[in-house]
Image 1: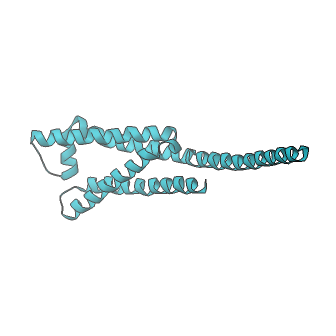
Image 2 (image 1 turned 135 degrees about the vertical axis):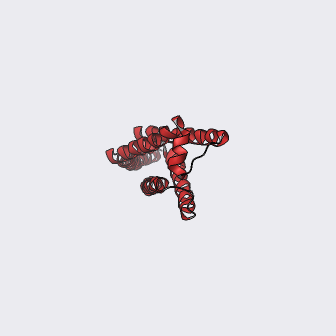
Image 3 (image 1 turned 180 degrees about the vertical axis):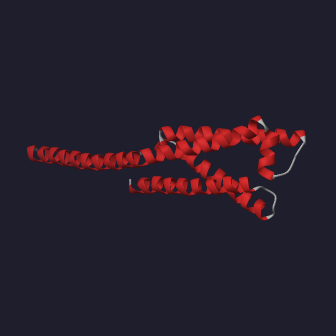
Length: 168
């Protein structure tokens, strides 16, 4: 009986040691993930994305006539078009605010990064298509090109995020 109790006690100690080793490895991996994804590089990247996105739409929000002229190289005087584009630019401003939130703790806000990547990718794709049909200006093409750089960076960030999570 004493031998059996000793054997059970020994197994419990051995299990605690194994769990502690696994827990330490998990904490190290989690710490590495947070350290890598919350690095200064990624924080600055998302801060720049927020400034670029928010700053790019503010002129269109306050002066939609000029924003549309810059974007399409056409004079547009329809109130409904102004209303629609001002609303659209306000929505894009919210994306910029989202990037500011991500900059505070990038590893915590992967959903915002994924939505941001999709928004920038779809916007850039649409501008490239419209540019090939001569419907948007060179300024719009420049904005789309910069957005594609952010798509690449966001894609790298997302890949790293999920690569680290698969290790766990």
